[in-house]
Length: 218
Image 1 (cartoon, helix red, strand yellow):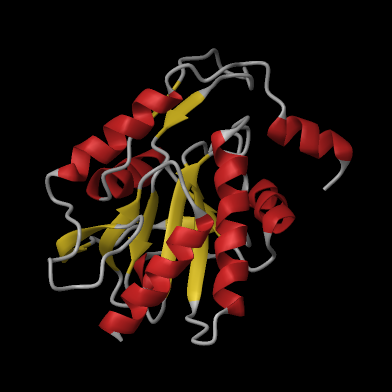
Image 2: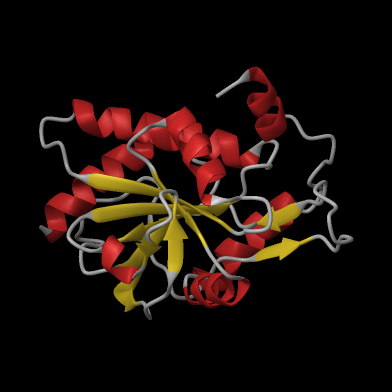
């Protein structure tokens, strides 16, 4: 990524005043369905899990290579999914760096569970597949990325308990802001929503919880 690209991605004069509110709202939206493990189960440090994994309806997005990205891509392995946008000045790059740290910790683990990381942009107007590829490769070439039509994004985020709002802007104005939830979603190998890691994120705690969770459910 060139220095100009890095500035465009990471430095934004617009302050996202409501980002914290959206993060809290996103966690609250599904909090009544989430729980910590039962008393006789080993305690998790950071994860909030559903009593039963939530079945997800299929969707149709496009990945960073321009190929179809649907629910099938969330099967056969565990997935960590984060919704954001590449022009995000702080929450998104910080979270992507945290996800990179989680992957590094998992790779160092003796059990070495396979976990995919997927970044889904809720800003398809600016985030083309090519731009998404450049963005996620900056953090980790193994990360996936996708985006798609507004209707598909709204349907997917709704069933996953993710909130986002695109600032009203004139056609052609590329300086608008996007507020969004900051949780990292956990998808099990059956393509079901198993839970989430609310912000703020601790890579060490997330990696430890994933190793424990995958071991329990494998």
